[in-house]
Length: 130
Image (cartoon, rainbow, N blue to C red; front, side, top):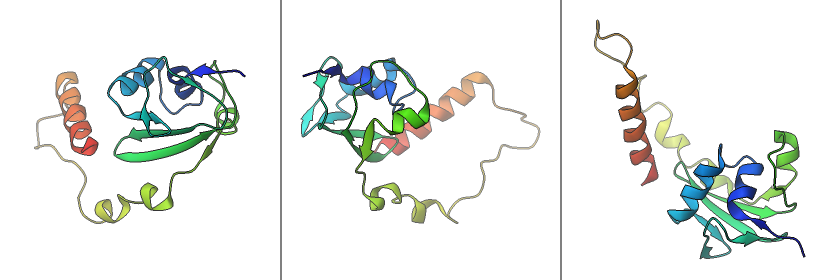
């Protein structure tokens, strides 16, 4: 029976942009195989249920095909079955729609610097992780 590391599989089916992100999220406890928190080196098999907490969403996938190398998006989508409930995917719709205006900066401040942009991204990540 063939098995693949969970961090490799998450990266190869394009759940995460990089293997490093997949590994880091495994270490932080945001990835589970079944109901058990997964370490990056934990092996996944065909038929396993993988639960991923990403960007405030609780996603659930069933492994259909084991991939070790990153593939194109259509091939990646064929490697899993998405069991995420529709209510989970739409949970932010009511909150976002019509609630906030576009982000604005004071007149004359110009574009945010790289440091300011990183601080904004970190702030937004912290808000949506809770």
